Length: 500
Image 1 (tube, rainbow, N blue to C red):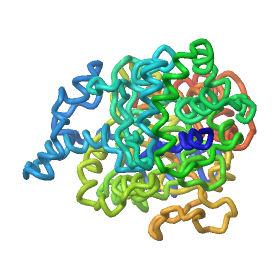
Image 2: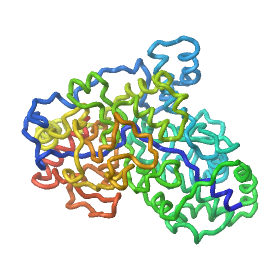
Image 3: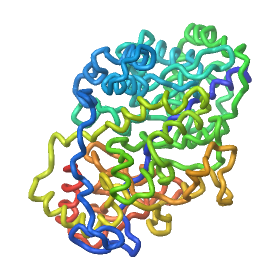
Image 4: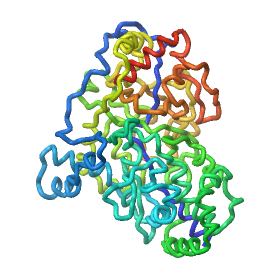
């Protein structure tokens, strides 16, 4: 029975379309290569925060009313209308893409559906409806009370599964209470959620608490306490999960070291290529969930003279299209079943997402002062669309935690390890890029690993940061705006950033 319940740790991927870091840097140090709007290389730069055209066809992606964001039921059947009934107008295409964003699991590796159902049925007081206490958002249309972001995935032996969709990481409640598609879900307790689904049943039903990491045990202790106090509940859960024992699926391994990582990740951060997931590079890296608003298209990339859209933390992914394809391949989905034309609605929908305006914008005069500071201190690295960078930087240049340098290449051979589906036209960069920086007002994780909790801390307004140096968790680097600026100047720069 214990071996059977070990198979509960077969978990899906939570892959972010453009997860990255917030950095300001330059080739030569703290300041840009020139002031007054001069970008890297000395060329005059266009306004990185120039308004983007609205290509949404009237879809609502940010609203206080969740039903409105879910298009009042219009998402249901949209893909059938687009692919099978010949309704190929752009609005139907976007509705289909939005449905895919919330509900398409691409047959990627998932967790047996029995597991989240048990947690939601018997432990709602701990996890909340739809796992809301773990930062997810309940799906009002789910008969089983599932959250938005978990949908049918690939089979687990004979059992159905639930796999992560785009919405698990890139759909969130903003600080003002609005729901927003494309927002990074910095409230999502990804590590704790996975421990509850994978480790809790093992200990609750088979014992052996001493064989697990103590931090991981502490995460699931409220669940264990409830089972210990109610023998009938333990018996009921045992019966409900019994089919997993005969599912006929291989048993993945969840080592104590990996359990410790899952237990200690901050909300909104993760390593999605680590045990017990199907793809494991044997390197512990942490990345924050990033927004997917305002991704540049081909024309904008050409105008900005970027090599390509430079998506992902390391800037190696060329476009939304290739990243969505990567979601399928990295997640173990059937790549042949998802050719370009089948992914097109999701690609087009993600490309239409725009950052919502700050409902309480900073003082305009102060933000105006910050604009000049941004041009002087930041623009040399943030001169691309929405403040994104145009090149990949080394970790030595930026000074941030360099664990991600070894991502998919622990031996630094220059080639991807572990049969990772890395293509020749998107090789590993071993570096880091400056991400888009719109919508910062809604975020609480900064630097690529999410180790800094505010722009004020990023700019060292209250003095040096905590000084955490543990690999993958380090909060050092990106200190260009820590020294040489007064508190007023830092306030002005933050006001400017929060106004976009």
